[in-house]
Amino acid sequence: MSLYVKHSAWLNATPSRAPEDKSTSPSLSRIERMRHANKDEDPEMPPVGAGGYLLGYLFEIGPTLDSGPLTQAELRAWQLNVGIVLEPWEIRVLRRLSCDYVASSHAAIDRNAPAPWGAAINLSVVAISMKNSIRTLANL
Image (cartoon, rainbow, N blue to C red; front, side, top):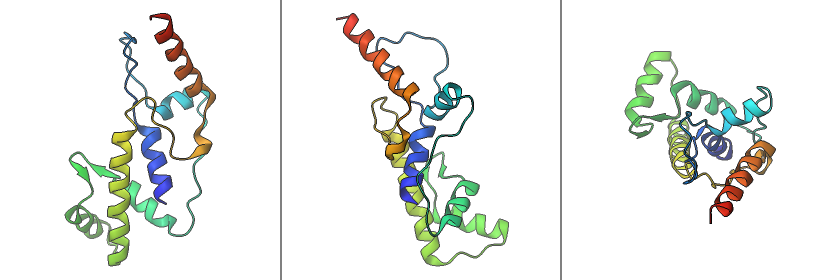
């Protein structure tokens, strides 16, 4: 599950622009770039395995708060609002997954950050990276 969350964070991150990129158009997240290049197809995701229902809960709540990972108070409020009582270990797993999402989101801002899951190699992303590298070399 952690790999799925980390990969989701990487896909949803908007990488920083190359220093030579003077474009004024809005930056797109990796998943937006992939969907645009692949005609709205969703990228492959890592297998989830047992406990996948917790991922459903995580993304229903929202994997993060504006201030960082989900808190105990936020999880308690969500449980009260939806009428679900989670086991203590489930709360710990959700908090850990939220922390993983935050950490991966921050790391994924680097435009050269590798995908946490190998199947994410997408030719359009590779092409953009190569194009930026060639531009950098041309400006030397």
